[in-house]
Image 1 (tube, rainbow over the protein chains, first blue to last red):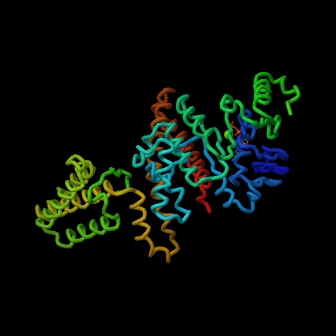
Image 2 (tube, rainbow over the protein chains, first blue to last red; image 1 turned 90 degrees about the horizontal axis):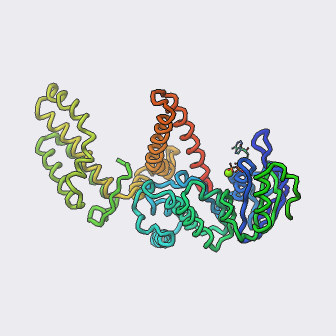
Image 3 (cartoon, helix red, strand yellow; image 1 turned 135 degrees about the vertical axis):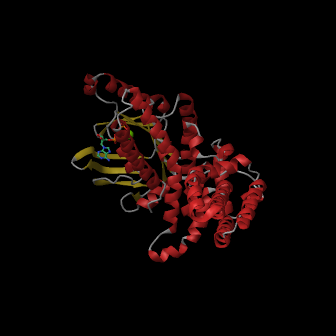
Length: 235
Length: 199
Ligand SMILES: Nc1ncnc2c1ncn2[C@@H]1O[C@H](COP(=O)(O)OP(=O)(O)OP(=O)(O)O)[C@@H](O)[C@H]1O
Ligand SMILES: [Mg+2]
């Protein structure tokens, strides 16, 4: 369970999230909103990459301010640009890198890495340099490197934005099959169809919150005409 | 040496621990430098060529390793001929070629992580001076990983510059390159923190 309690965040003088209080127990949570509305800031709060200026964020009872390291162990994070997430020169090495701080014995680590690579269809590329992978494969590698540590929550900030349709489909197929709780920020609304919970962020506040079926049409109307902002959001 | 050019394989050399290979490399170059005779260079060269064969590498792999030296040789050979005669020229240039060829073979047959582990071990004495070997090793591997990323950025920026008809403007190259590199560094830092590297 993720809880935000009266969270406000400002970068310097500029307040980008205002007094957000929300409980997020759902298995699948989508987040949509215009460019610059505060989505990335919001999800970065969930693993302590960004700390609230006031208010608090807790994940499974752990406060991101007090227990940041522990929270990051529970919350995996995937970003839009896979090139900035792959740290090691080759595929298997990058996945293994995630396990380094977990004092795991070598045989077990090797088996874990091999297992994850197989699951992500990357077993044939274990020893290949990461830069030779396709965009989709790179994002799958970034996912593999995060999931090998078995986080309880996975946050994805526009994981398919830089991918073509085929690669995007492959990545989302994998994400939606995961047993973890998932928080997904995306501009690709069709990815959220049927999701139980979608938040619409506008200018730093949650302006709509509910099942995708109710919330997405509202978001589309909000985006298509400025006047539609006056329409009452579904709650 | 650490150019991430690991070539997967199953030869004896691939299976030899990185530390042993580095020790062998050190031994070979030390002996060559200590003896400084054409015979030693010839034996060293023979050992190197044979080891390449044992590792199932082709002559062109060896050539790829030593090729960058051709410009150095162009300067060194005349200088050595003039200052020390033909023997000195053979010994100096030969030693260099053997050392670089052998070092290249270590790279070709050793995974970067194994190399880093070996370096971690070698760097241990520096811990007393306040150096964290794990951090040094991490920075090195991240540098290796960054090379293709930066190369791709460079190509894109150069293309964008050409598309705008600014191919002669150095500023149209350097400004976006610096901006994008800094942004990349920023994102990389964030991704590392998300993967728990800051704690
Ligand atoms: N590190 C930062 N320093 C200062 N301002 C920032 C920083 N990061 C984001 N901002 C500003 O905060 C606001 C919200 O940014 P955020 O990245 O959260 O938006 P977003 O909803 O993710 O947008 P996008 O859809 O473009 O990714 C923007 O106006 C942005 O310019
Ligand atoms: Mg964003």
